[in-house]
View: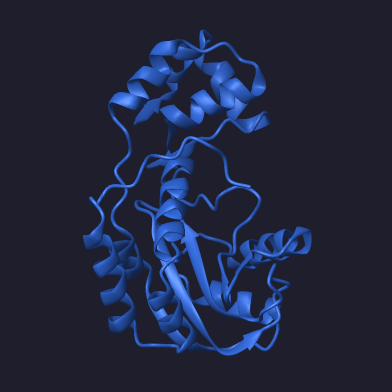
Length: 235
Protein backbone atom coordinates (compact mmCIF):
# COMPACT_ATOMS: atom_id res chain seq x y z
CA UNK A 1 0.00 0.00 0.00
CA UNK A 2 1.51 3.33 -1.07
CA UNK A 3 0.81 6.44 0.96
CA UNK A 4 1.52 10.12 0.43
CA UNK A 5 3.82 12.30 2.50
CA UNK A 6 0.73 13.88 4.07
CA UNK A 7 -0.68 10.48 5.06
CA UNK A 8 2.68 9.40 6.48
CA UNK A 9 2.85 12.59 8.54
CA UNK A 10 -0.61 11.86 9.96
CA UNK A 11 0.26 8.28 10.88
CA UNK A 12 3.53 9.38 12.50
CA UNK A 13 2.04 12.38 14.27
CA UNK A 14 4.38 14.95 12.73
CA UNK A 15 4.19 17.55 9.98
CA UNK A 16 5.10 16.98 6.34
CA UNK A 17 8.35 18.91 6.66
CA UNK A 18 9.52 16.47 9.33
CA UNK A 19 8.68 13.49 7.13
CA UNK A 20 10.69 14.96 4.26
CA UNK A 21 13.59 15.67 6.62
CA UNK A 22 13.50 12.05 7.85
CA UNK A 23 13.58 10.86 4.24
CA UNK A 24 16.63 13.05 3.62
CA UNK A 25 18.54 12.59 6.87
CA UNK A 26 17.28 9.42 8.59
CA UNK A 27 16.78 7.02 5.69
CA UNK A 28 12.99 6.85 5.89
CA UNK A 29 12.25 4.73 2.76
CA UNK A 30 10.55 6.74 0.02
CA UNK A 31 10.17 6.48 -3.72
CA UNK A 32 9.98 9.34 -6.19
CA UNK A 33 7.39 8.95 -8.93
CA UNK A 34 6.80 11.80 -11.38
CA UNK A 35 8.67 14.18 -9.05
CA UNK A 36 6.43 13.28 -6.10
CA UNK A 37 7.43 11.27 -3.04
CA UNK A 38 5.49 8.12 -2.22
CA UNK A 39 5.99 5.83 0.76
CA UNK A 40 5.07 2.23 1.45
CA UNK A 41 2.96 1.69 4.57
CA UNK A 42 4.82 -1.45 5.69
CA UNK A 43 8.22 0.16 5.13
CA UNK A 44 7.17 3.22 7.14
CA UNK A 45 5.93 1.00 9.98
CA UNK A 46 9.18 -1.02 10.03
CA UNK A 47 11.26 2.17 9.95
CA UNK A 48 9.25 3.69 12.81
CA UNK A 49 9.70 0.58 14.96
CA UNK A 50 13.44 0.41 14.23
CA UNK A 51 13.95 4.12 15.04
CA UNK A 52 11.68 4.31 18.07
CA UNK A 53 9.28 6.71 16.38
CA UNK A 54 5.65 6.42 17.59
CA UNK A 55 3.28 5.41 14.80
CA UNK A 56 -0.46 4.95 14.69
CA UNK A 57 -1.55 1.32 14.71
CA UNK A 58 -3.86 2.26 11.83
CA UNK A 59 -0.79 2.46 9.61
CA UNK A 60 -0.08 -1.26 10.00
CA UNK A 61 -3.76 -2.18 9.84
CA UNK A 62 -4.14 -0.36 6.53
CA UNK A 63 -1.03 -2.04 5.12
CA UNK A 64 -2.28 -5.49 6.13
CA UNK A 65 -5.66 -4.89 4.53
CA UNK A 66 -4.05 -4.03 1.21
CA UNK A 67 -0.87 -6.12 0.85
CA UNK A 68 1.35 -5.75 -2.17
CA UNK A 69 0.77 -8.26 -4.94
CA UNK A 70 3.97 -9.71 -6.39
CA UNK A 71 3.77 -11.63 -9.69
CA UNK A 72 4.91 -15.27 -9.86
CA UNK A 73 8.63 -15.82 -10.24
CA UNK A 74 8.18 -17.06 -13.81
CA UNK A 75 6.69 -13.69 -14.79
CA UNK A 76 9.42 -11.81 -12.92
CA UNK A 77 12.06 -13.75 -14.86
CA UNK A 78 10.32 -13.07 -18.15
CA UNK A 79 10.49 -9.37 -17.30
CA UNK A 80 14.14 -9.48 -16.21
CA UNK A 81 15.43 -11.97 -18.76
CA UNK A 82 17.30 -15.28 -18.71
CA UNK A 83 20.73 -15.08 -20.30
CA UNK A 84 23.23 -17.82 -21.00
CA UNK A 85 26.93 -17.78 -21.85
CA UNK A 86 27.57 -14.68 -19.73
CA UNK A 87 31.26 -13.84 -19.48
CA UNK A 88 33.51 -13.08 -16.53
CA UNK A 89 36.47 -15.08 -15.18
CA UNK A 90 36.34 -13.62 -11.66
CA UNK A 91 33.58 -12.66 -9.25
CA UNK A 92 34.01 -8.94 -9.97
CA UNK A 93 34.08 -9.49 -13.72
CA UNK A 94 30.97 -11.67 -13.58
CA UNK A 95 29.10 -9.08 -11.52
CA UNK A 96 30.13 -6.37 -13.96
CA UNK A 97 28.82 -8.44 -16.88
CA UNK A 98 25.52 -9.05 -15.10
CA UNK A 99 25.01 -5.39 -14.18
CA UNK A 100 25.53 -4.38 -17.82
CA UNK A 101 22.81 -6.82 -18.91
CA UNK A 102 20.14 -5.71 -16.44
CA UNK A 103 17.08 -4.00 -17.98
CA UNK A 104 17.44 -0.87 -15.85
CA UNK A 105 16.08 2.65 -16.40
CA UNK A 106 18.49 4.99 -18.24
CA UNK A 107 19.09 7.15 -15.15
CA UNK A 108 20.50 4.30 -13.06
CA UNK A 109 24.24 4.62 -12.42
CA UNK A 110 25.42 1.10 -13.23
CA UNK A 111 29.00 1.84 -12.17
CA UNK A 112 27.83 2.91 -8.73
CA UNK A 113 25.57 -0.14 -8.45
CA UNK A 114 28.52 -2.38 -9.27
CA UNK A 115 30.69 -0.70 -6.62
CA UNK A 116 27.97 -1.28 -4.02
CA UNK A 117 27.70 -4.94 -4.99
CA UNK A 118 31.48 -5.39 -4.81
CA UNK A 119 31.46 -3.84 -1.33
CA UNK A 120 28.66 -6.18 -0.24
CA UNK A 121 30.56 -9.21 -1.51
CA UNK A 122 33.63 -8.08 0.43
CA UNK A 123 31.52 -8.37 3.61
CA UNK A 124 30.39 -11.90 2.80
CA UNK A 125 29.56 -13.96 -0.25
CA UNK A 126 26.04 -14.02 -1.64
CA UNK A 127 26.67 -17.54 -2.91
CA UNK A 128 23.98 -19.75 -1.38
CA UNK A 129 25.54 -23.06 -2.41
CA UNK A 130 25.31 -25.59 -5.25
CA UNK A 131 26.71 -23.08 -7.73
CA UNK A 132 24.01 -20.43 -7.20
CA UNK A 133 24.33 -16.82 -6.00
CA UNK A 134 21.81 -14.06 -5.38
CA UNK A 135 23.91 -10.86 -5.44
CA UNK A 136 22.44 -8.10 -3.32
CA UNK A 137 23.52 -5.17 -1.22
CA UNK A 138 23.06 -5.11 2.54
CA UNK A 139 19.63 -3.57 1.95
CA UNK A 140 17.45 -4.59 -1.00
CA UNK A 141 18.22 -3.02 -4.36
CA UNK A 142 15.42 -0.50 -4.59
CA UNK A 143 15.40 1.37 -7.87
CA UNK A 144 12.94 3.58 -9.70
CA UNK A 145 11.23 0.74 -11.52
CA UNK A 146 7.50 0.33 -11.86
CA UNK A 147 7.56 -3.39 -11.07
CA UNK A 148 9.95 -5.91 -9.57
CA UNK A 149 11.92 -8.18 -11.87
CA UNK A 150 14.48 -10.96 -11.63
CA UNK A 151 17.34 -11.49 -14.08
CA UNK A 152 19.03 -14.87 -14.31
CA UNK A 153 22.53 -15.06 -15.79
CA UNK A 154 24.22 -18.39 -16.45
CA UNK A 155 27.97 -17.96 -16.62
CA UNK A 156 30.10 -19.32 -19.43
CA UNK A 157 32.63 -20.50 -16.85
CA UNK A 158 31.96 -21.07 -13.11
CA UNK A 159 33.80 -18.56 -10.92
CA UNK A 160 35.03 -18.68 -7.36
CA UNK A 161 32.49 -16.83 -5.22
CA UNK A 162 33.44 -17.76 -1.67
CA UNK A 163 30.16 -19.65 -1.31
CA UNK A 164 29.43 -21.45 1.93
CA UNK A 165 29.87 -24.90 0.33
CA UNK A 166 33.07 -23.88 -1.49
CA UNK A 167 31.63 -24.59 -4.93
CA UNK A 168 32.20 -22.10 -7.76
CA UNK A 169 29.12 -20.21 -8.98
CA UNK A 170 27.55 -20.69 -12.40
CA UNK A 171 24.06 -19.16 -11.90
CA UNK A 172 23.32 -15.65 -10.64
CA UNK A 173 19.82 -14.45 -9.80
CA UNK A 174 19.59 -10.67 -9.58
CA UNK A 175 16.52 -9.19 -7.86
CA UNK A 176 15.42 -5.60 -8.46
CA UNK A 177 12.34 -4.30 -6.66
CA UNK A 178 10.64 -0.93 -6.00
CA UNK A 179 9.92 -1.68 -2.32
CA UNK A 180 11.28 -3.80 0.54
CA UNK A 181 8.11 -5.95 0.87
CA UNK A 182 8.19 -6.87 -2.81
CA UNK A 183 11.93 -7.63 -2.55
CA UNK A 184 11.32 -9.99 0.37
CA UNK A 185 8.42 -11.64 -1.42
CA UNK A 186 10.59 -12.33 -4.46
CA UNK A 187 13.29 -13.85 -2.22
CA UNK A 188 10.64 -16.11 -0.68
CA UNK A 189 9.70 -17.37 -4.12
CA UNK A 190 13.33 -17.95 -5.06
CA UNK A 191 13.93 -19.82 -1.82
CA UNK A 192 11.02 -22.13 -2.64
CA UNK A 193 11.92 -23.05 -6.23
CA UNK A 194 15.65 -23.38 -5.58
CA UNK A 195 14.98 -26.28 -3.24
CA UNK A 196 14.00 -28.31 -6.31
CA UNK A 197 16.84 -30.66 -7.40
CA UNK A 198 15.58 -30.78 -11.00
CA UNK A 199 15.77 -27.00 -11.33
CA UNK A 200 19.25 -27.01 -9.83
CA UNK A 201 20.32 -29.62 -12.38
CA UNK A 202 18.95 -27.46 -15.20
CA UNK A 203 20.90 -24.48 -13.91
CA UNK A 204 24.06 -26.55 -13.60
CA UNK A 205 23.62 -27.79 -17.18
CA UNK A 206 23.08 -24.21 -18.45
CA UNK A 207 19.76 -25.27 -19.91
CA UNK A 208 17.85 -22.94 -22.18
CA UNK A 209 15.50 -20.25 -20.93
CA UNK A 210 12.38 -22.09 -22.11
CA UNK A 211 13.32 -25.24 -20.21
CA UNK A 212 14.15 -23.38 -17.01
CA UNK A 213 10.96 -21.32 -17.14
CA UNK A 214 8.90 -24.43 -17.82
CA UNK A 215 10.29 -26.09 -14.69
CA UNK A 216 9.61 -23.02 -12.57
CA UNK A 217 6.04 -22.82 -13.87
CA UNK A 218 5.55 -26.50 -13.02
CA UNK A 219 6.72 -25.83 -9.47
CA UNK A 220 4.36 -22.85 -9.21
CA UNK A 221 1.44 -24.98 -10.33
CA UNK A 222 2.12 -27.37 -7.44
CA UNK A 223 1.56 -24.56 -4.96
CA UNK A 224 -1.53 -22.51 -4.27
CA UNK A 225 0.03 -19.71 -6.30
CA UNK A 226 0.53 -17.47 -3.29
CA UNK A 227 3.56 -17.11 -1.09
CA UNK A 228 3.26 -15.78 2.48
CA UNK A 229 3.97 -12.08 2.70
CA UNK A 230 7.33 -11.65 4.47
CA UNK A 231 7.57 -9.45 7.52
CA UNK A 232 11.27 -9.63 8.36
CA UNK A 233 14.30 -7.83 6.99
CA UNK A 234 16.89 -8.96 4.54
CA UNK A 235 20.24 -10.03 5.96
